[in-house]
Length: 285
Image (cartoon, rainbow, N blue to C red; front, side, top):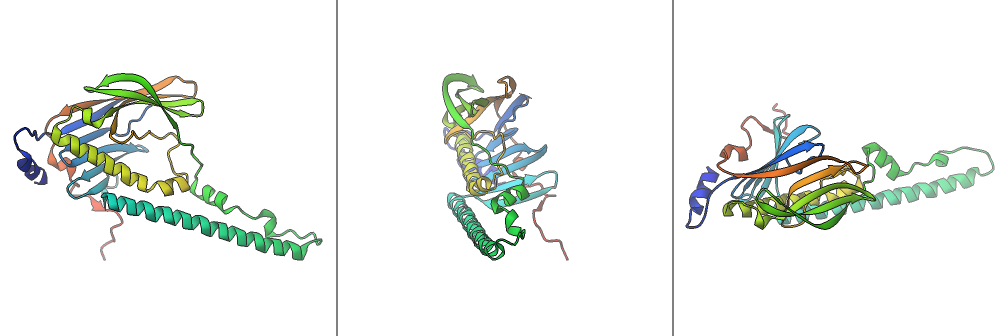
């Protein structure tokens, strides 16, 4: 109903109310940012696969919400994602990580001081104390979370251009030291062959969702939770249309390309299925 009302309101001279699908064809081992993206004005659906599980993100530009659908569990989680909410979340998480680091440093300093006092009291007695194997709290936390520090790939621009899905894109390379991990061809969102009503909604939806994802960066960086081979996020106002991946020897192991199709999409695709339940829902008594 929301979609129909929006289209009725926007059926003005020169305005086309149409929907858009962006689907990636992948060959070999080279995942794209998403399997499929669907756009209907201010509504956006992004289907991705993590560890083999399909996860959907729904963006509602009218309500400024992002809803995550966990299909295997038939659950959903909805959050507000306006700019102020994203900035607030980033500030809170950044402050929390700073507090955790300071508390950890204070605890380690106190442990070191106590150990020095204990060693002074037992010096010359040949007594082995727990201080001889005093743990490093940072190392313990990394081991507990299975975290390993990840180096951010270096993005190198090139002068190579291609035409993909009716738009011109420029290739950028992702390097890890002396090893090239990936290449991706990014286009200006404004140049994509999308209906006018979908282009604005697509640009805003992608921008808001990426901004909210960045809000969790302090936690991801602090606990090294990032993907060891992350899919590079294109710059502001850009969108990746094609990419290719390489192994340690420089051989290409896979590639992908987008296809853009304009046509009607079932409005239910932008809604939470009726048989899905909210995450963390309390069991009925």
